[in-house]
Image 1 (cartoon, helix red, strand yellow):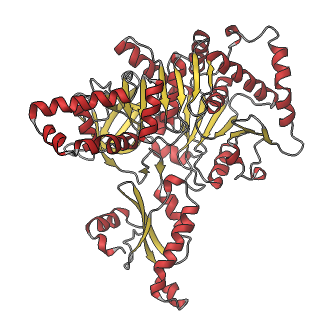
Image 2 (spheres, helix red, strand yellow; image 1 turned 60 degrees about the horizontal axis):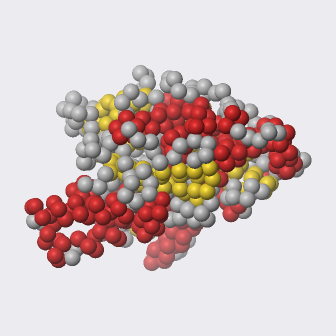
Image 3 (cartoon, helix red, strand yellow; image 1 turned 30 degrees about the vertical axis):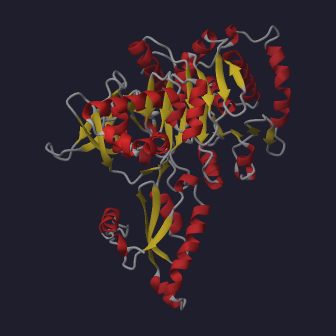
Length: 566
């Protein structure tokens, strides 16, 4: 257990950085200092107190990135409550299920999200507040939520008659061993996993993030541009928590991170750290770089040993300048990075590195500063924080499952003892489900995934079983499997031909029924789970004795004989 308390880290930082800029919304231009942020946090604490929220109670948060999102998150954890961040792209059914499964007592969300929910389906919730307007959107009959909201300013003046100063920043006394966050890896009601993240895991990520730059560079973080959803642990840790603990300024992009928008925002905000998923860098490559290097002259120069090296470096310098020209590090993580594009950026000298993590580690497992980063790897285990071992089936096997242990590892899955037990070995090592190996210098190389989980292009966790369970219930679907082809998700279906015959249905009409199924299915899925097409297999899929599809055999057949699926 770490000595530094996860709440006191922020308490000390906020006092020290009182007059510095803290949160900036790129679209509106609204900006607040650490003082103003602390004033807002204090008002949240008054709300929690008078709504009878105790330490350990859950508070749900669902909305797009904004300063208000960040304030709500920080208010909850500094009060000693447990924050439940929910991806705003989850379906209404999934959002409802997560709120209920977590037994959240308050809900903070965007108004358009609330409009799609039925508050009567949220029995544990005692009030709903709009993130941006801070309006009370709903309370149960006979509730006091709206009355408490209306009285906050009066309570504030009574509590702080001489104004709110740094000495008034006194947050909860809650141990690092206590639950701080429940992060849901999926919204499905049947396969929900609420990852229980302790204060210790938050502290581990934050302290490493701060120490990494102060130790290596003797510098503090100054600014960041947040382009990833803050409901993901990757963005929460390194676009929010590390930054606030070091007194940096956080700009919330609040828009889809297209190459032109990202570059424009970087030039204006000059971030000293950038956290991207591979898709962002791959789009920048395709839009900004690929058209240039395809020109005959540039292409020829790149193939020339000495001159080519100079051209690569010139491209790197130009791209670095377009990304603000101030970044100590550009961290890529959350999904697999295209190896060809990674190799290209390495030749340019761009100061990037690829890290490895998972929600269950809040999220960081391994990382190397860009000057020590080995291309193709995902860095080294965090020194003093995380241990990694490779569990091979045989000593001479080239790869094995990556197992982890350390300060950042989760407490378990909320209300799921079976899944928690399966996640850990008897001696406390956690299964990652990833296959890989380590070299002599402890650099980790990931070769594949032993789990069925897929990764979306922005690093979202996609669970094919979730989609398959929905597709199985649609007309004339006998068997199905969802797989990934590049960045697209495809469903392979063996139709229920016996039922079609009983219905005296013309076989030629089945493709149209599957097209209708596709529309129905996608209406039930989040954007990143959308299926691009349904392909029909005339033959049944190979099954296990338990009558489940042998996924690996179907995937192999599709890869070898794609024409069998139409």
